[in-house]
Length: 144
Image 1 (cartoon, one colour):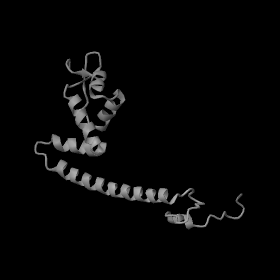
Image 2 (cartoon, rainbow, N blue to C red):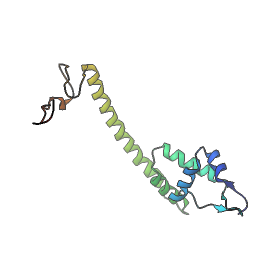
Image 3 (tube, rainbow, N blue to C red):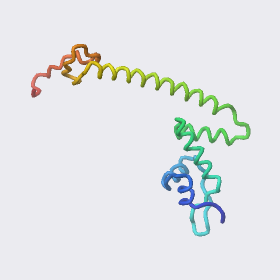
Image 4 (cartoon, rainbow, N blue to C red):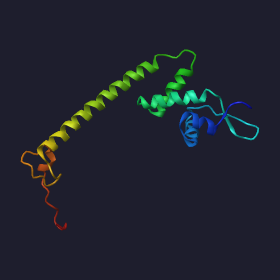
């Protein structure tokens, strides 16, 4: 193969480092590149666009395993509705995480509003953290 982009060119154009490029290659996200007569890796020009797709999918919350599966599915002659289904699943996962984070935020706001000052010896009168009522006595033999 005499045409193509060398690793450094691909990495620079895609905004990542060479180690990431090689990692994606080992993971099967990128096909093994051809080689120059001097042994340098030569990637097809569309590799930069493919790396952009991989990074965009990661920003959407897909793991590299999920991206690899989606790329494999997309490379088949008759891809199914795999991306749509996975996107719906990802939305449900994100909604659950948002609900969890909202609950955590609410609990933290209660801690701030109650002026809590310690996890084990809180002096606020109406502490919202339930485990603060657990005894903090030290086991026998433990220094005070």
